[in-house]
Length: 262
Image 1: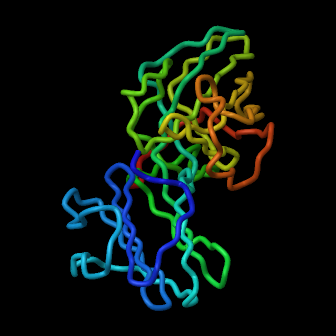
Image 2: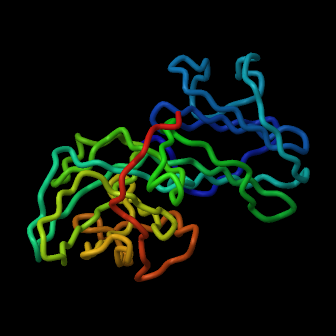
Protein backbone atom coordinates (compact mmCIF):
# COMPACT_ATOMS: atom_id res chain seq x y z
CA UNK A 1 0.00 0.00 0.00
CA UNK A 2 1.41 3.38 -1.01
CA UNK A 3 -0.16 5.46 1.77
CA UNK A 4 1.80 6.42 4.86
CA UNK A 5 -0.29 6.95 8.02
CA UNK A 6 2.48 8.91 9.77
CA UNK A 7 2.13 12.61 10.49
CA UNK A 8 4.28 14.83 8.27
CA UNK A 9 4.88 18.52 7.56
CA UNK A 10 4.28 20.44 4.36
CA UNK A 11 5.88 23.82 3.68
CA UNK A 12 4.12 26.63 1.84
CA UNK A 13 3.79 26.05 -1.94
CA UNK A 14 4.73 22.37 -1.49
CA UNK A 15 2.48 19.44 -2.34
CA UNK A 16 2.25 15.81 -1.26
CA UNK A 17 0.69 12.98 -3.27
CA UNK A 18 -0.60 9.57 -2.19
CA UNK A 19 -3.17 7.00 -3.23
CA UNK A 20 -5.39 4.10 -2.14
CA UNK A 21 -6.52 1.68 -4.82
CA UNK A 22 -8.08 3.75 -7.63
CA UNK A 23 -8.09 6.89 -5.45
CA UNK A 24 -5.44 9.57 -6.01
CA UNK A 25 -4.99 12.32 -3.37
CA UNK A 26 -2.95 15.51 -3.68
CA UNK A 27 -2.51 17.95 -0.76
CA UNK A 28 -1.13 21.43 -1.30
CA UNK A 29 -0.10 24.04 1.30
CA UNK A 30 -0.71 27.42 -0.33
CA UNK A 31 -0.79 30.80 1.41
CA UNK A 32 -3.15 30.39 4.41
CA UNK A 33 -5.01 27.40 2.94
CA UNK A 34 -4.97 23.64 2.77
CA UNK A 35 -5.97 22.45 -0.70
CA UNK A 36 -7.05 18.90 -1.56
CA UNK A 37 -7.53 17.43 -5.02
CA UNK A 38 -8.78 13.87 -5.62
CA UNK A 39 -9.18 11.70 -8.70
CA UNK A 40 -9.96 8.12 -9.63
CA UNK A 41 -8.47 8.45 -13.13
CA UNK A 42 -5.45 6.27 -13.89
CA UNK A 43 -3.69 9.17 -15.64
CA UNK A 44 -3.91 12.02 -13.11
CA UNK A 45 -0.90 13.88 -14.49
CA UNK A 46 1.08 13.91 -11.21
CA UNK A 47 4.60 12.52 -11.11
CA UNK A 48 6.37 11.71 -7.85
CA UNK A 49 5.25 11.87 -4.22
CA UNK A 50 5.96 15.55 -3.51
CA UNK A 51 7.22 18.71 -5.13
CA UNK A 52 6.81 22.40 -5.85
CA UNK A 53 3.63 24.14 -7.01
CA UNK A 54 4.94 24.58 -10.55
CA UNK A 55 5.28 20.79 -10.89
CA UNK A 56 1.50 20.26 -10.68
CA UNK A 57 -0.78 20.19 -13.74
CA UNK A 58 -3.02 23.25 -14.01
CA UNK A 59 -6.14 21.13 -14.54
CA UNK A 60 -6.48 20.01 -10.91
CA UNK A 61 -9.68 21.00 -9.08
CA UNK A 62 -9.24 21.92 -5.42
CA UNK A 63 -11.26 21.86 -2.22
CA UNK A 64 -9.95 24.50 0.20
CA UNK A 65 -9.77 24.98 3.98
CA UNK A 66 -8.36 27.95 5.85
CA UNK A 67 -5.37 27.64 8.17
CA UNK A 68 -2.73 29.87 9.75
CA UNK A 69 0.51 30.83 8.06
CA UNK A 70 2.58 28.77 10.49
CA UNK A 71 0.42 25.59 10.23
CA UNK A 72 2.30 22.82 8.44
CA UNK A 73 1.29 19.41 9.87
CA UNK A 74 -0.84 16.93 7.91
CA UNK A 75 -1.91 13.35 8.44
CA UNK A 76 -3.89 10.76 6.50
CA UNK A 77 -5.80 8.10 8.44
CA UNK A 78 -7.85 5.12 7.24
CA UNK A 79 -11.54 4.88 8.14
CA UNK A 80 -14.39 2.46 7.60
CA UNK A 81 -17.43 3.64 5.59
CA UNK A 82 -19.90 5.86 7.43
CA UNK A 83 -22.85 3.51 6.76
CA UNK A 84 -23.27 -0.13 7.80
CA UNK A 85 -22.49 -2.77 5.16
CA UNK A 86 -24.19 -5.86 3.76
CA UNK A 87 -21.83 -8.78 3.16
CA UNK A 88 -22.67 -11.98 1.33
CA UNK A 89 -20.63 -15.20 1.49
CA UNK A 90 -18.59 -16.37 -1.49
CA UNK A 91 -20.68 -19.53 -1.32
CA UNK A 92 -23.76 -20.10 0.85
CA UNK A 93 -23.15 -22.10 4.00
CA UNK A 94 -25.40 -23.93 6.45
CA UNK A 95 -24.19 -23.65 10.06
CA UNK A 96 -25.37 -26.54 12.25
CA UNK A 97 -26.97 -25.97 15.68
CA UNK A 98 -24.16 -25.28 18.14
CA UNK A 99 -21.70 -24.81 15.29
CA UNK A 100 -19.65 -21.82 14.21
CA UNK A 101 -18.02 -20.57 11.03
CA UNK A 102 -15.31 -17.95 10.61
CA UNK A 103 -15.51 -15.50 7.68
CA UNK A 104 -13.19 -12.80 6.39
CA UNK A 105 -14.77 -9.68 4.88
CA UNK A 106 -12.92 -7.03 2.86
CA UNK A 107 -14.34 -3.49 3.19
CA UNK A 108 -12.97 -0.67 0.98
CA UNK A 109 -11.55 2.00 3.26
CA UNK A 110 -12.21 5.72 3.36
CA UNK A 111 -9.24 8.08 3.69
CA UNK A 112 -9.56 10.89 6.23
CA UNK A 113 -7.41 13.98 5.67
CA UNK A 114 -6.32 15.97 8.71
CA UNK A 115 -4.60 19.35 8.49
CA UNK A 116 -3.18 21.64 11.14
CA UNK A 117 -5.44 24.61 11.80
CA UNK A 118 -4.58 27.03 14.57
CA UNK A 119 -1.93 24.72 15.99
CA UNK A 120 -4.00 21.51 16.20
CA UNK A 121 -4.93 18.83 13.69
CA UNK A 122 -8.54 18.78 12.54
CA UNK A 123 -10.38 16.59 10.06
CA UNK A 124 -10.75 18.35 6.72
CA UNK A 125 -12.58 15.70 4.71
CA UNK A 126 -13.15 11.96 4.25
CA UNK A 127 -12.90 10.37 0.81
CA UNK A 128 -13.98 6.82 -0.15
CA UNK A 129 -11.38 4.74 -1.96
CA UNK A 130 -14.18 3.04 -3.87
CA UNK A 131 -17.79 3.99 -4.66
CA UNK A 132 -20.21 1.48 -3.09
CA UNK A 133 -23.85 0.95 -4.01
CA UNK A 134 -26.47 1.77 -1.39
CA UNK A 135 -29.22 -0.67 -0.45
CA UNK A 136 -31.99 -0.98 2.17
CA UNK A 137 -31.69 -3.40 5.08
CA UNK A 138 -34.83 -4.68 6.81
CA UNK A 139 -38.47 -4.27 5.88
CA UNK A 140 -40.01 -1.14 4.38
CA UNK A 141 -41.34 0.19 7.68
CA UNK A 142 -38.28 -0.48 9.85
CA UNK A 143 -34.91 -0.53 8.16
CA UNK A 144 -31.96 1.61 7.21
CA UNK A 145 -29.72 2.56 4.33
CA UNK A 146 -26.41 0.70 4.08
CA UNK A 147 -23.72 -0.18 1.56
CA UNK A 148 -23.67 -3.39 -0.44
CA UNK A 149 -20.16 -4.83 -0.68
CA UNK A 150 -18.92 -5.96 -4.08
CA UNK A 151 -16.56 -8.58 -2.67
CA UNK A 152 -17.81 -11.69 -0.88
CA UNK A 153 -17.02 -13.03 2.58
CA UNK A 154 -14.62 -15.98 2.51
CA UNK A 155 -13.87 -18.84 4.90
CA UNK A 156 -10.09 -18.57 4.65
CA UNK A 157 -7.71 -15.65 4.41
CA UNK A 158 -5.66 -15.46 1.23
CA UNK A 159 -4.05 -12.06 0.65
CA UNK A 160 -4.54 -12.41 -3.11
CA UNK A 161 -8.34 -12.44 -2.63
CA UNK A 162 -8.40 -8.84 -1.35
CA UNK A 163 -7.50 -5.47 -2.78
CA UNK A 164 -4.77 -3.44 -1.07
CA UNK A 165 -7.27 -0.74 0.01
CA UNK A 166 -9.57 -3.25 1.77
CA UNK A 167 -9.86 -3.38 5.56
CA UNK A 168 -10.10 -7.04 6.59
CA UNK A 169 -12.80 -7.78 9.20
CA UNK A 170 -13.04 -11.30 10.65
CA UNK A 171 -16.51 -12.39 11.78
CA UNK A 172 -17.03 -15.66 13.67
CA UNK A 173 -20.70 -16.73 13.46
CA UNK A 174 -21.99 -18.93 16.31
CA UNK A 175 -25.33 -20.67 15.78
CA UNK A 176 -27.01 -20.98 19.20
CA UNK A 177 -30.44 -21.82 17.80
CA UNK A 178 -31.94 -25.30 17.53
CA UNK A 179 -32.08 -25.23 13.74
CA UNK A 180 -29.43 -25.06 11.01
CA UNK A 181 -28.69 -21.49 9.95
CA UNK A 182 -28.36 -20.66 6.26
CA UNK A 183 -25.83 -17.85 5.97
CA UNK A 184 -26.81 -15.80 2.92
CA UNK A 185 -26.10 -12.21 4.02
CA UNK A 186 -24.89 -10.26 7.04
CA UNK A 187 -25.63 -6.71 8.16
CA UNK A 188 -22.60 -5.26 9.93
CA UNK A 189 -22.48 -1.94 11.77
CA UNK A 190 -18.92 -0.57 11.63
CA UNK A 191 -18.94 1.94 14.48
CA UNK A 192 -17.03 -0.17 17.03
CA UNK A 193 -14.22 -1.36 14.79
CA UNK A 194 -10.73 0.12 15.07
CA UNK A 195 -8.22 -0.20 12.23
CA UNK A 196 -4.77 -1.77 12.52
CA UNK A 197 -1.86 -2.12 10.11
CA UNK A 198 0.01 -5.40 9.82
CA UNK A 199 2.52 -6.31 7.10
CA UNK A 200 1.35 -3.49 4.83
CA UNK A 201 -2.34 -4.48 5.09
CA UNK A 202 -5.24 -3.04 7.11
CA UNK A 203 -7.23 -5.13 9.60
CA UNK A 204 -10.07 -4.45 12.03
CA UNK A 205 -10.45 -5.98 15.47
CA UNK A 206 -12.06 -9.42 15.36
CA UNK A 207 -15.71 -9.96 16.28
CA UNK A 208 -18.14 -12.80 17.04
CA UNK A 209 -21.88 -12.84 16.40
CA UNK A 210 -24.30 -15.06 18.32
CA UNK A 211 -27.21 -16.28 16.18
CA UNK A 212 -30.34 -16.74 18.29
CA UNK A 213 -33.74 -18.32 17.73
CA UNK A 214 -35.45 -15.01 17.02
CA UNK A 215 -33.72 -12.33 14.99
CA UNK A 216 -36.21 -9.80 16.39
CA UNK A 217 -34.45 -10.11 19.78
CA UNK A 218 -31.21 -8.97 18.21
CA UNK A 219 -27.94 -10.76 17.64
CA UNK A 220 -25.30 -10.42 20.32
CA UNK A 221 -21.90 -9.29 19.01
CA UNK A 222 -18.62 -9.26 20.94
CA UNK A 223 -15.43 -7.46 19.91
CA UNK A 224 -11.83 -8.41 20.54
CA UNK A 225 -9.31 -5.67 21.25
CA UNK A 226 -7.05 -6.79 18.37
CA UNK A 227 -7.37 -8.41 14.94
CA UNK A 228 -7.41 -12.16 14.51
CA UNK A 229 -4.25 -14.24 14.01
CA UNK A 230 -1.92 -13.63 12.18
CA UNK A 231 -2.51 -9.86 12.55
CA UNK A 232 -3.03 -9.81 16.34
CA UNK A 233 0.19 -7.81 16.82
CA UNK A 234 -0.84 -5.11 14.33
CA UNK A 235 -0.41 -1.43 15.20
CA UNK A 236 -3.59 0.60 15.69
CA UNK A 237 -3.76 3.53 13.26
CA UNK A 238 -7.42 4.60 13.71
CA UNK A 239 -9.75 4.28 16.71
CA UNK A 240 -13.38 3.19 16.49
CA UNK A 241 -15.50 6.24 15.69
CA UNK A 242 -18.23 5.25 18.16
CA UNK A 243 -15.76 4.17 20.83
CA UNK A 244 -14.30 0.84 21.81
CA UNK A 245 -16.57 -1.71 23.45
CA UNK A 246 -16.50 -5.42 24.17
CA UNK A 247 -20.17 -6.10 23.36
CA UNK A 248 -23.18 -4.68 21.53
CA UNK A 249 -26.38 -5.88 19.88
CA UNK A 250 -27.11 -5.97 16.17
CA UNK A 251 -30.80 -5.62 15.39
CA UNK A 252 -31.90 -7.88 12.55
CA UNK A 253 -28.33 -8.78 11.62
CA UNK A 254 -29.49 -11.30 9.01
CA UNK A 255 -32.65 -9.57 7.74
CA UNK A 256 -33.32 -9.37 4.03
CA UNK A 257 -32.27 -6.63 1.63
CA UNK A 258 -35.17 -5.06 -0.29
CA UNK A 259 -33.51 -3.40 -3.27
CA UNK A 260 -30.55 -1.36 -4.45
CA UNK A 261 -30.93 2.41 -4.19
CA UNK A 262 -28.02 3.29 -6.48
